[in-house]
Length: 130
Image (cartoon, rainbow, N blue to C red; front, side, top):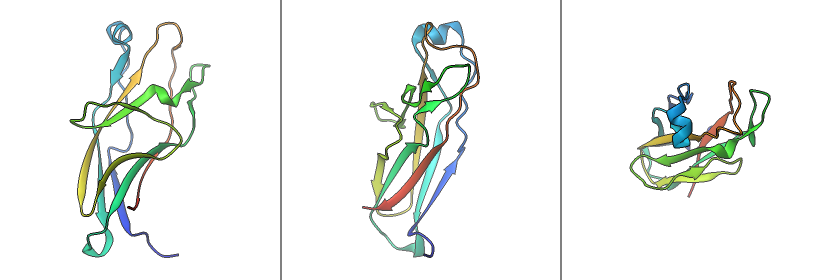
């Protein structure tokens, strides 16, 4: 029992994508505003940690179509690699002290597959001992 070894804050925990335009569909992607995750080891002690991200469901409901959650991709701001979101813990960052991690999100758009609607999924960011 008791409290965990790390505090994880999601600043702007709700990731909202703007309504897509025809140009967004032509590009195949739509980006959201960056989000920030803050990791703080408890007790002001430096402890090795791994920060992970995962979706709570494999699909996003809405529009009469189960859009795959892997259509959402993320990356640490400034890195070049986009990673599809899945229901498995995916490593975002490692550290051993207080750290802010800025994340970028984008969603894949497809003219033929995506139908109008509001899609949503829940995600979790967690820190664990490295």
